[in-house]
Amino acid sequence: MSEQEATAESAADDRLAWLRKSVAEGQSGAVDSAWSWIVELSTLADNDADSAEAQLNELFRLGTPPVELDGPTEGILVMTTTNPALDTVTRAVTALWMPWQGKRFDADSGTGDNRLTRSTGLVGKLLWPLYSMRDAESGKLAFDFATYVEAGKDDPDRQVMVIDYANVESNPRLVIRSIRDELVELVPGVYLGKILFNTGSDRFSKIGYFALRTPR
Image 1 (cartoon, rainbow, N blue to C red):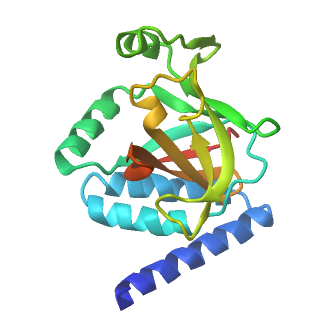
Image 2: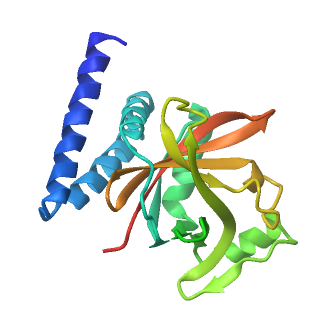
């Protein structure tokens, strides 16, 4: 690690420690500040993807496995990390239409699902004609998952919450069961995740970052 990288990591560590302390002390706005930090890095990705990814990776590695994450969350796709051309197309498409709204968690059972817009149902039928999404008041629910804590595939020296789609037999085999999300808590109520894709033989490639927050 270069001196510049070490300085940047230390600054991120200090900033996150201050935010955690502020949340613990009940200071108004600390949770919003943590969320704004992620949004700033998402915006940075539009012009400097390498810097945004490096900072997101540092931030992720400072996180801890979520404790008692339960109920609905709001979500954003922070950035994708496939290749420059595909990432550009993804940014353009998701700026116009983002079907994913967040996730729901059941802490007691270690399970959950994804919250989608109502319009996702038509696209879902085209991609997965035999898979049925469930109706919900705010849209659709789909792609169930199991949750547990173990070492990360991208960060084997860190413990993460795994969001496991592969072992839920009702999930479509096309794409969905190849995805493994890994999630950490930055401050209570704000979470950063990595999207990994199983390329075979239990090898995973990181294809993006997402973030969740509990409704306020």
